[in-house]
Each structure stands twice: as C-alpha cells, then as structure tokens.
Length: 209
Image (cartoon, rainbow, N blue to C red; front, side):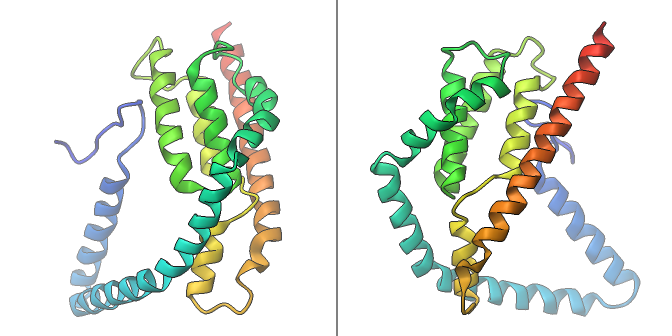
C-alpha cells in the first residue's frame, strides 16, 4: 500500500495518511532542533488529557444523544426530510427523481440539522455509494458527489449537540451560548459552499462546450 491512497469514491487522500505525515514532520523537526523530549512529553500529556476529556464526555454525550435519539424515533428526521426535500432535489438535478440516493442525501442533511452526526454518517456513506453507481467515470467524482461533500463539510446544524457537550465537559458555565453563532456561521459556510459549487459547475459546463 502506498503512502497516498485514493478513496473508493475517487479523488480523495486518506485522512490517516495526512495525519501520519504531520506526525513524521513534527518528530523530524523536533529531532533536528534537539527537542525530541518535548515530543514525548507532549504525546503523553495529550493522551492523558484525551482520556480525561473522554470520561467527562460520556455522561453529557449520553444525555444529548439520548434526547436526539428520542427526537429521531419521534419522526423529527422524517419531518425535516419533508421540509428540505424540494430544496435537495433542486441542488441535485442529475439524480433521477425516485433514485434511493436522493432519499439518503435528504436523511443525511436532516440528521446534520439536528446535530445527529452518528446518524448522518451511515446515511452519507450509503448516499455516496449509490451516487457512485450513477457515475459513468468511476475514477472521477460527479457533480452530485462534490455537492454532497460540500454540504456535509459545512455541516449546517440547528442544534450543535456535540459542541455543547464538549463545552460542558470542559467546564463552560453556559455551554449552549454557541448555538446562535454556530447557526449563523454554518449557514454562511453552507451558502459559500453552494455558491462555489454553482460557479464550478457553471465553469465546467462552459469548458465542455
């Protein structure tokens, strides 16, 4: 296996390899400056902090995920699917109207809106696999794949449950204060991503003529 590996949906570099490169560069840089001991100390300290934070997160995440799971079982994701369905169909015109990929995309974005990252991931993977079945060039990502990736990356969220849990575990006095800022920020990021996606599609269409 090479150092760089393309993802099965085409084009991406495996994230683990990027992290491996970061670690190698950091270790080499520290060794070059005679500070290799700092790397060891930082690694041990970070590992201890990660374990401590994980234990703090268990209770908070259980609470939030439990509440969100109840919302999911109560039909909140399906309700959001009905609301955003027309918008999604407009953003993915290349997907046939009744194709199952469209349904999984809607479920992915609906789960993201509720901050249900654990629920959104399997829907997103399934949607990508189904989009790949529609791809006439398996080694090249389609426009729909790029749009879905952009939307998942910006992660427009109405309830940032994970961030609230992290702030609570870190001792924040008001962990939910970030909700308004997060909604505005993710909305702006989503709008920027969709604008860039539209411009790229326009340029690509003109380039094919």
